[in-house]
Length: 157
Image (cartoon, rainbow, N blue to C red; front, side, top):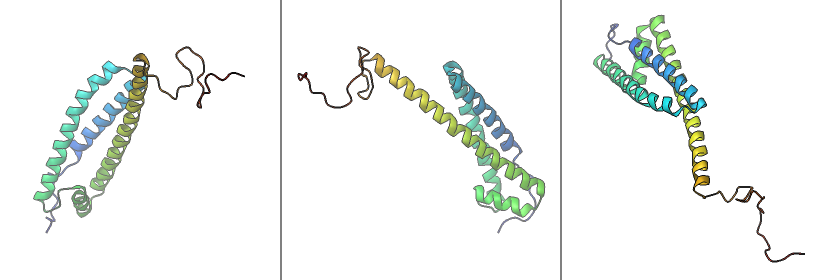
């Protein structure tokens, strides 16, 4: 049975601060991705990794506190704990936290798309430099258009 007393040790404040920091970092990363600033992107990778580790630790602490108070150690348990508290400020903090997490996930998804586009462009450039031209390209190495279908070589009318 869940502990019915309000437990101030379960808090979203640290988690919320970390997620806000992550959002700011993802927005910075996105700016650097748009500008194709590789040096800045590389510098952000380590910072992002450390921040995600801190977020993971904060979530584990929150889950342990939930379990100690008789709730499942997951998001559903957190929702149950929030509901049981019956305090508007706690409910608002939880809803805001979930919205912030969703925003961070969306930023990360968009950054992934930008990274994928950069990777594809770089792969195309590498292929071109290595002479591995795509067979579907419109122009040949001499700058002349390539025929799209099979050619009938040797037959001139």
